[in-house]
Length: 306
Image (tube, rainbow, N blue to C red):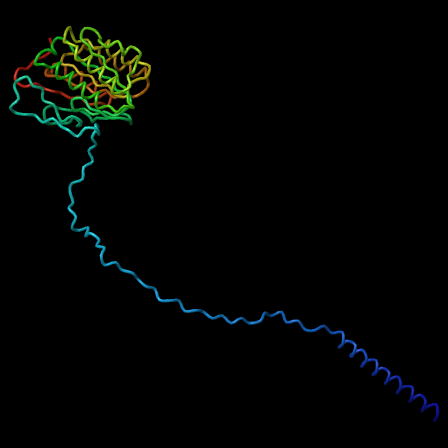
């Protein structure tokens, strides 16, 4: 009985010991447990302020024009090849016989009016001018003008050289020009021997004074004049070629060879005076070289080249 009681006491002590250790361990765990951290941010209360009302300011003093009341006129796409001159020359029916009829200076030659035109005035970008109504644009302009004996008839040479001076004076100062007159041979001033002339006021005046000294003489042989122009240090952009006579048949052939060797486009505008005898080759030259042919008749007495 004593032994049995002793065993019961030991079991009870062991059980109590287990319970006591469990209680101690729980207590220690509770003491060492870290405080709970709340990761959720604190709520923020947003208050939206009310925007002030928009104020529209209207100026009653400003009146916009009514587009429907504006006059609508015709729209034109014609370009003036001579922007520096808006003047025109109108034909007076009371002019005496022998007066040359010309279109408005600076106009593109076309059908009707005092003469007939083929093609359109054209050229490279740059300055612009016109010669007997045929316009051209570019940087270098060459003039090949007939002063043969037949140009004395009906005062043609005076009219031609006056228009030549006007055309040169209309050139912008950044362009260049070259003048070759021709009869039986080429005629040019000494101050042109070095090449192109800048279109300055001094050069224009000097050329005008030289042209005032020129008279008509000899035949109608333009080949030498073309040869001079095509052999200049730089080729021209536009050539104005004027004659009142029937040019030699080989002229177009040589001009075609010149331009083919240069391997660049040159605009050649042709002007025929009075006689229609040489009209066909002038038309052909203008057509091949994207220029304009202009026939300028004379009133009263017809006059052709010898």
